[in-house]
Length: 333
Image 1 (cartoon, rainbow, N blue to C red):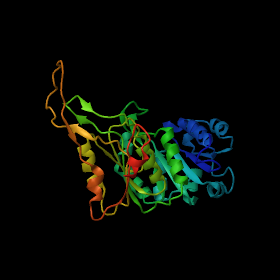
Image 2 (tube, rainbow, N blue to C red):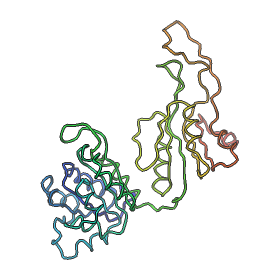
Image 3 (spheres, rainbow, N blue to C red):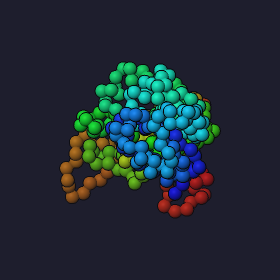
Image 4 (tube, helix red, strand yellow):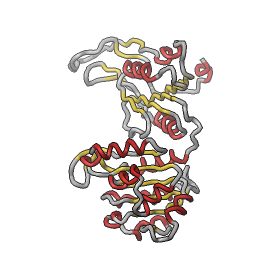
């Protein structure tokens, strides 16, 4: 079903890395979102995937040479709402960082004046190389969104940071690129997920919060240009890109993180985390042995919102509370 990318024009650049074969799936997913996709390939990319495969997936002509059409490097970028480079190899990153234009893709990068999404992919040793990192720092100073790379098993069989980001994450970055930046300049802190209140090292009291609400709010604020910090309790959700992520476990840790991350320049605090209302009065240092019965004494957990609202200079605060029924009167309090 078409989404945020409906009627958007995407120019996809595919450079010569092993992950180039994933470009077919990326094209399909972009089209599922309602986008029109035009593909450019480097000569090296042709060793990993054929232009015909991408032409079939995109339903558009695939461009491979600077001389396919006399003005392709000007005309194609001018029509694009977003330019995506996936995979972005060390070679294309170096060309972009230093203004080298010796093929269709690198020349098009220099002529493009809109939002660019880069999805790096390479061997971990290459990615961690000082020159590659310097090139990325230079590129990040421009209006560029970088997504990934991720840690995982690489084509060479080694483990490390260099794997192309998953297709849904790249799609998410493209959505962010086309979203109006009406929250630019705002600093927003969002909490999400449950907390765990430990009885002993292996047992804890928690709740069924997934964190989906907070993660969705954090992504939406990020897409709209805000500087976002997401403070999350234990969750199986994937960490969103492009924001400051703080992982916590207990309500005490959540309180500490909120107090630290919510500064005088924070404009909005969204407390969507399902923070425990009670926690064990005492925590055993060792696992409590099995017995017929066990009594756990609880005490009230700290109220995080009250710690923030009592500040002289505080942000606007939005709080969430889970209820088992409709209780409008209580919500008003």
